[in-house]
Length: 191
View 1 (cartoon, rainbow, N blue to C red):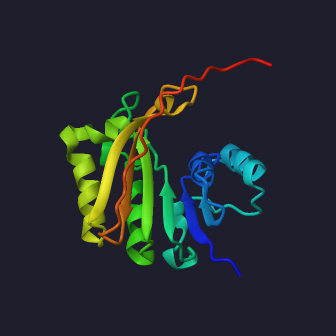
View 2: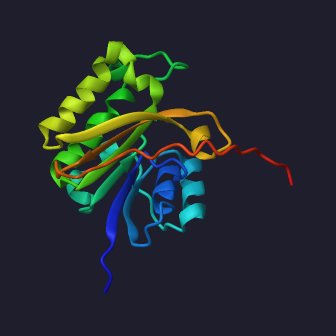
View 3: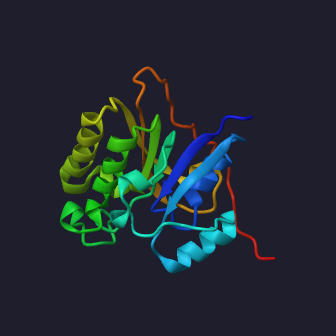
C-alpha cells in the first residue's frame, strides 16, 4: 500500500495551484478536500480533475469536517489587496478569508502550506497586511516561513502575472529554496 501526500485545495478556482503542485513531479499526491464557491469555476474544476464533490463557501464549513492533510494549498481572494481593486485589505470581507485559512491550519497542523496572492499583498498598507499574516502563522507554530514574488513568464509560461507565494513548514529544520527562473520564452499559438 502506497503512502500518499494528502493535500487540500482552498479557494481552488479551476485548480491551477493543484495542477502545478501535481505536475511538480510527485506521483503520490492525493487531494482529499477542495473548496470553491464560484459555480463556473466548480464546473471547470470538476472537468479538470473528475471530482464528484467540491465543498462551497469555506466560511460555512466546520474545521472538523475537513480531513487531516499534509499540505494546505490556498490562493485566497486577491481583490482586497490588488492594484486594480479598492485595496481595502482586511476591511473588505474577502480580505478576512485569510483567517479561515488560519483557522484550518491552527486546528489541522499540516506539515506545510502554500499560499498565493497578488504581488501587491507584499506592500499593502505599507507592509502591515503581510506582516499580520506572517505573525498569525508564526503564532500557531510555523516559524519556518518564506515568501517571494515570482513572475510566471520567468518560468516559461505565456503570461506576465506576478504573484506572491508564501510557503511555511511546521518543522523549522526544513530547508526550502524557491525555484530559480529558467527565463524560457513562450508564445501562444493559434491552431
